[in-house]
Length: 497
Ligand SMILES: Cc1cc2nc3c(=O)[nH]c(=O)nc-3n(C[C@H](O)[C@H](O)[C@H](O)COP(=O)(O)OP(=O)(O)OC[C@H]3O[C@@H](n4cnc5c(N)ncnc54)[C@H](O)[C@@H]3O)c2cc1C
Image (cartoon, rainbow, N blue to C red; front, side, top):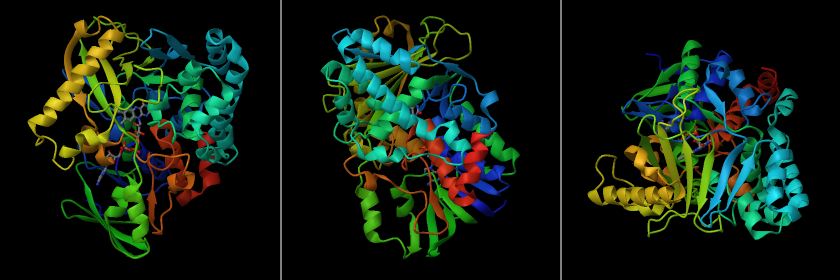
């Protein structure tokens, strides 16, 4: 087995796989190491009763013709083999306990007009909101890539509060909450949420919100196949334990089994704090920097309940729902009463043309501290108390979902759930945070972790650096690799693929 490479990528989440493939396409001899049995990190789907259940991706944005995520998948050579479906024109429903429901619609004109129908006096403010969101989203568009850049300045908005911007645009308190109603997609906290993340996610969904049909693991599988076919090496069940450095360079990595592997460059798709905690023998990284990484807050976790539906019983809805118990959409995090304050509901589609859903997923923001008593206990060894905590949350979320979707529970065959600790077990995200490092508009520079590190041959990638999610992580993979093969060259290749 080979032990020396041009680049070793640690972690096969979307970011790691994409870095592996970008470099393999350039003729680099790459090796991607994954601790888990399955590749893909949050793109994994697990099999139960013959059905694949998606874990960390329920829809993606900017997947329409001429849009940037589709362009990247085209550049990777996998788009034509993906099975995807565009969500309905009203792709998101923001639902309040009062029974009021508001829709996000595809295309800016429809988006503005449909909300202006509900809030006629706010049309000018809605247009202003939409224009800015689009302008920020366009900073990473295909045309920008064609011109040899990966982005054209959107990061300036990291220091602007998303909520302040929304409040400047519109004055109706309910409409403000409707516009902020997708904040669980970025782990939003009212005082910290920045306009860059808000705009990237809102824009990518308004321009083209799609779902993978038949499981998100297809993306990971296709990327793995492509890396293999280009001569790359994929190794699963290979957990990296140590990064061993000499001076300002990584000398080798060591796996849990004690195997040592070497490369010219090392790219980590792990959380930066985890990466730096593994470093040994290094003098160029100050202790204060490591301490800072370890104390920087992460986003909250998500508790996911997967409802396996009786075959052919429950109609598939080609959209997403956000249920809010209160009008204040920022007050989302489940506390010790274990009751969901906010819940996202989406359905999976097993095959194109099917009318019924296999799996309904409920997700609620939850404080990772609720699970801290079991943080260091390996999976399978956690106490009964952990099991009962999970069951209690599961029950509460299901009852809440039934009140929003009468008849839902009648059609449930089996229930599975994932706590933040499950995500920690399968992706290594510290404490089970859903989206990694919290990007705080009050401390924009602190929130910006560059791909380059003080070690000349160690780079970072993945959701902790820039924006999380399929699109954010994809852009970051390109940014990371551009440090090795040149930004203009890579951006043009992607933009013109
Ligand atoms: C519940 C949930 C729902 C989400 N829904 C969506 C959605 O609908 N749409 C969207 O766009 N985004 C969504 N996201 C966010 C998105 O899934 C992530 O931002 C993205 O997939 C992260 O990719 P990544 O490469 O940064 O890391 P990860 O997917 O976390 O992958 C990291 C990989 O590194 C591996 N690893 C860790 N430590 C080691 C080690 N020591 N040795 C070897 N390997 C290691 C892990 O096993 C893992 O495979 C969701 C996230 C969650 C948690």
